Image (cartoon, rainbow, N blue to C red):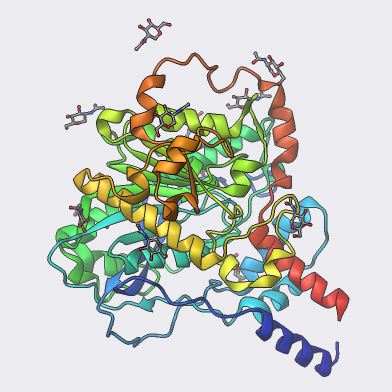
Length: 500
Ligand SMILES: *[C@@H]1O[C@H](CO)[C@@H](O)[C@H](O)[C@H]1NC(C)=O
Ligand SMILES: *[C@@H]1O[C@H](CO)[C@@H](O)[C@H](O)[C@H]1NC(C)=O
Ligand SMILES: *[C@@H]1O[C@H](CO)[C@@H](O)[C@H](O)[C@H]1NC(C)=O
Ligand SMILES: *[C@@H]1O[C@H](CO)[C@@H](O)[C@H](O)[C@H]1NC(C)=O
Ligand SMILES: *[C@@H]1O[C@H](CO)[C@@H](O)[C@H](O)[C@H]1NC(C)=O
Ligand SMILES: *[C@@H]1O[C@H](CO)[C@@H](O)[C@H](O)[C@H]1NC(C)=O
Ligand SMILES: *[C@@H]1O[C@H](CO)[C@@H](O)[C@H](O)[C@H]1NC(C)=O
Ligand SMILES: *[C@@H]1O[C@H](CO)[C@@H](O)[C@H](O)[C@H]1NC(C)=O
Ligand SMILES: *[C@@H]1O[C@H](CO)[C@@H](O)[C@H](O)[C@H]1NC(C)=O
Ligand SMILES: *[C@@H]1O[C@H](CO)[C@@H](O)[C@H](O)[C@H]1NC(C)=O
Ligand SMILES: *[C@@H]1O[C@H](CO)[C@@H](O)[C@H](O)[C@H]1NC(C)=O
Ligand SMILES: *[C@@H]1O[C@H](CO)[C@@H](O)[C@H](O)[C@H]1NC(C)=O
């Protein structure tokens, strides 16, 4: 490869890939990475075929906090890179995933590619700035990433929520669903966890069992993260700082009483939404003291979805997710979500299910802010995303903010105050659409809202898995999973190399 080629290549990359945009709320945004050891335990007994090591050994929890800060504060630490280091570990994880489907791409190639494409992108939040000293403590969201993702790849959504006055803990899961992640123990040793392929595990006959083990692992992590947050807000920030193996958190001692854990939401995207939904069978009185959940595009290939929900839920699908039919254990995925929202008990706040028009499954993730026009080439060919990422983010933030208010003070504003406009996707109730503010209907189709579901208490639709003949299909499909952020990263590189 000649120097000229590399120069040309990097100019092109600079042109195509920008930096992440600033957050839009009234507050500045701080971020602290926290990784603390917990009482180690095996969440299940699976072991790797090759090494005999346990697959689901939980030793530490890792999460990034995003929180409001004074907007005048300037950074006194280096910004956090958007692709966590070591880069070659992330490349290795991605190549496990990419090579499992069809192509054959070397880790070296991916390392170079990621280095030049995304290696200089930073998260916009300010590392370790003091949390805002406001009168009221901040409501909290514990957020789970999707499959083959990283906690950092939702920094726009999480950071923007923080700029609107909330604290977000974005968990990085060590269940093998992250592209790659490094466990850092308190004795200084590390363990690399790369993307998990079920066929590397001893005696696996049923891939869904692995998915369910991953969800159990994720739930255990979320529970531990909530415990750490409880410690921080009850004045043990300094202890958490000393236990933190990520060497951040010098301002955590100022977090005493700053978190409103009586307004605690759990949530996630895709696999993360499916795993958050699972934790709700325990909420609010079990081990998960959550008061509500924000579920974005609950997974289509994340195993059967939990339907046992006792707290208010906000489920928002992308248009891609709602519009493309998907046979989910013998039923339409859309209908399964609709039932879950309708069944959320109205006495405790109820359930919403809606579609944000013009969005793809990955619009909520950071790569949709980075790839610009270029990313459209690699989106699902069956679907055109027409809403730009910042307008989409504004809507996601809007409904999330309204949902926080609902959970906090029981008020329904804006989109949450609207009635059902489209009982099914693209199936309008014209009366209701006419009644609803156009600023809502131009973005949202509302399929379920609490008031409207009361008349439908007793439908006798089949439970989740009468038609399990589809399971094999589903397992065969696991790797077909359209993960466009990885496609965007990888395919754009391949195209550039081939075309130039
Ligand atoms: C986890 O399981 C492995 C065997 O798979 C065992 O060696 C190890 O002691 C277990 N760890 C804990 C903390 O239970
Ligand atoms: C692992 O296996 C042991 C012994 O068979 C059993 O007691 C334990 O409950 C298993 N642990 C899990 C998490 O399944
Ligand atoms: C983890 O991955 C990094 C980067 O590939 C490597 O340098 C390190 O040695 C690995 N650590 C372990 C414990 O395998
Ligand atoms: C796979 O495991 C899941 C969950 O345990 C179960 O519901 C399903 O029936 C199993 N599928 C097959 C083909 O055994
Ligand atoms: C949280 O505080 C409790 C009580 O002091 C302590 O036992 C526990 O280890 C702490 N958790 C962490 C993660 O430091
Ligand atoms: C949860 O606990 C609260 C008070 O502690 C109680 O009022 C409520 O009924 C409980 N809910 C469930 C579902 O058990
Ligand atoms: C997407 O847009 C292109 C160009 O506007 C059009 O040709 C194509 O049919 C559209 N695809 C879908 C699924 O709407
Ligand atoms: C509800 O509570 C939030 C604090 O989380 C506050 O900002 C908001 O103004 C309140 N809304 C109403 C209508 O009282
Ligand atoms: C359509 O919406 C109106 C309220 O605007 C409601 O009264 C009516 O029942 C809805 N129709 C259907 C079929 O849901
Ligand atoms: C609707 O949006 C327009 C422009 O974005 C704004 O000027 C107007 O105030 C909004 N109307 C309502 C009722 O929010
Ligand atoms: C729902 O249906 C069951 C049996 O089909 C019946 O016993 C029950 O009374 C019904 N509940 C309501 C609220 O209609
Ligand atoms: C299973 O699916 C098939 C085709 O979608 C349908 O004809 C059949 O009625 C379903 N069986 C059950 C028990 O739902």
